Amino acid sequence: MHELHTVAFDGDDTLWHHETVYQYTHERFRTLIERHVPHADVDGRLHATEMRNLKMFGYGVKGFTLSMIETAIELTDGAIPAEDIGELIDWGKEMLAHPVELIDGVVATLDALAPHVRLMLITKGDLFDQESKIARSGLADRFAHIEIVSVKDAQTYRRCLAKHGLSPKGFLMVGNSMRSDVMPVLGCGGQAVHVPYDVTWVHERVDDDRLPEGAWRLERLDQLLPLVERLRQAA
Amino acid sequence: MHELHTVAFDGDDTLWHHETVYQYTHERFRTLIERHVPHADVDGRLHATEMRNLKMFGYGVKGFTLSMIETAIELTDGAIPAEDIGELIDWGKEMLAHPVELIDGVVATLDALAPHVRLMLITKGDLFDQESKIARSGLADRFAHIEIVSVKDAQTYRRCLAKHGLSPKGFLMVGNSMRSDVMPVLGCGGQAVHVPYDVTWVHERVDDDRLPEGAWRLERLDQLLPLVERLRQAA
Image (cartoon, rainbow over all chains, first blue to last red):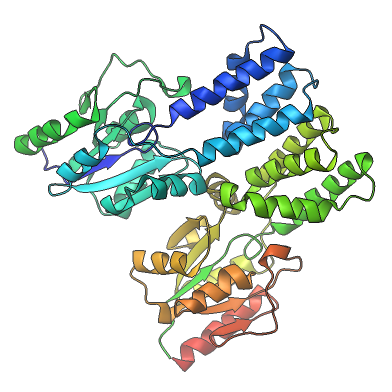
């Protein structure tokens, strides 16, 4: 075992609530569309639009809002009034302005880890929106490095590690997504902790039962400190 | 004089054409709106919407597209058909997919500077869009450091310099915007070269006649090499 030097955290749905805001907007979107087209497959069609646009828009609220508008036009066959589309834009703005609510145990966990390891934040999404969230979270000063990335694959993690001269062996990533926070980190020789969020976006789900070597799963973030202590003692 | 160690470039409208794509979309937007509302102040209203939304959306095509939609709904008093709004989204996608066309002299200038100074790219805008543009520009390998930032103020430049351990005195920023590339760099003790682009977004304009100490203005990028040589000899 190599000595653990860095614990990196994902932002959305790991340090602060995020998916709940999306879920709420999904619900409102369903209600709005069903006023025009009852029994439409709103969720399925919106997801399909998002996937189609991902290569063009990347992740984030602005792209999501554009995908909602596109889906609304398609599902209503162009019958949706402009007023309703204006409402979709307002929802996007509400999402962007939504207060950043920290997940239980975040501050205590970061404070307890700080004396022992380097703390890092690696968050995916829209630069402007993520910067604003990090500022509003009040957590920025707790991290030695903050990286906002557009995609979380092994190459991204390799670049982040190299940039700060960190060896993957002593690097532990903590996040709610197997696909974005766990698998790619293992792929470049690091370790990872999966802390599932109650609601996890369908695109982020992988078969959770197979937990590969170098990965752990915790139910809550406040269980992280004992795990890190164990890993440091085993080193 | 301190020895020049780093020459940093802005991206949009400094290394590659950008504003031309926006101008073209503005033109199409004017034409579309005037079909519904002749003699509307389309440019003025779109600009006002963009400024109002800037704090929420930041810079970039996705925010611009949402602002176009919002303006279209307002100017037509909700009468714009969904089909036309769908077209606005398509324009946004066209802008995002538009080929990255380098400005004349870019490659030769970078290659000529490379043996003498560290080259850096500091570009503002949407993370996903800028990463895609940098990749498509084919220039990424030429830069020692690439920074994509959401806003270009003195604090941003200070952070970028500190991050890479660069002293402001030997730092020269090259860009088309007085407001984003020149003034804030002078503000933190660096030097800057203003290379105006033919078309400059109204929000980026400042009174160009007053060129403060530590700043130069060139008509074309291929005039940069002689200036850098002069500055290096004077050091």
